[in-house]
Image (cartoon, rainbow, N blue to C red; front, top):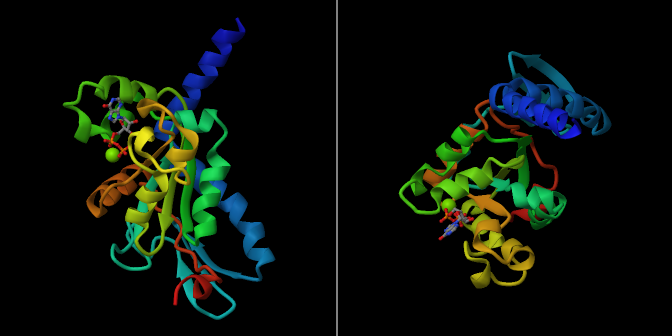
Amino acid sequence: MFARSARSIASMARTRGATSTRSMSAVAARVIATPLYAKAGLALATAAAGTTIIATSNNKAAQCDALPVYGVPGTNQERTFLAVKPDGVQRGLIGDIIARFEKRGYKLVGLKMVWPTLEMAQDHYADLSKKGFYGGLCKFFSSGPIVCMCWEGKDIIKQGRQMLGETQPLASKPGSIRGDFSIDLGRNICHGSDSPEAAEHELKMWFPEGVNDWGKAVDSSVYE
Ligand code: IDP
Ligand code: MG
């Protein structure tokens, strides 16, 4: 009985994740953003049709969706798609993974939890569709929620891959996410775009609603 109702809630969540990500994340963004802006002394100047313009204390305007969702590769506004896969979520590693990128100095501009449908998983891994492990990979990727992230910063596509480690955990150096937390190839915790083209494709796919183009006050202590 319990298993049945848990399953129906799970399938509802899947449907919502697949169909109404945009409205859910827009609501979440509003709930979270208002007190933060107020606390930081930022003035909310305009909020219309999904575009928010804020005036920061140094009068530098920051605007949602001012950039394409995939940023500008080769600049400090390069962006990549990183995800905590279902195994990483189950193992309670979301916070640790986010903390590594935050501490390094990168900027989180998009964040949400999504339970991918099998079709979403197949689209995401379409480049591997000829591989023998494709079926199992897609089944696993859609077996539970993942955490979708858009990270921004200089060289984030390459650095993101280095911080993840090698695809094969055995080859991943301690200090990398896969080198610290994983053993098996099919349970290697995280995903990261492997090129600017992949980042563009994946960010358009996972963040069709756009991300948050906010100004980070400490960037002058991160970049020379
Ligand atoms: P990546 O995640 O490091 O970009 P890809 O080659 O794109 O590696 O493969 C996607 C995912 O598929 C890997 O992270 C891994 O979990 C899984 N995978 C890759 N190669 C194999 C394999 O040979 N057997 C089983 N699973 C694999
Ligand atoms: Mg890959």
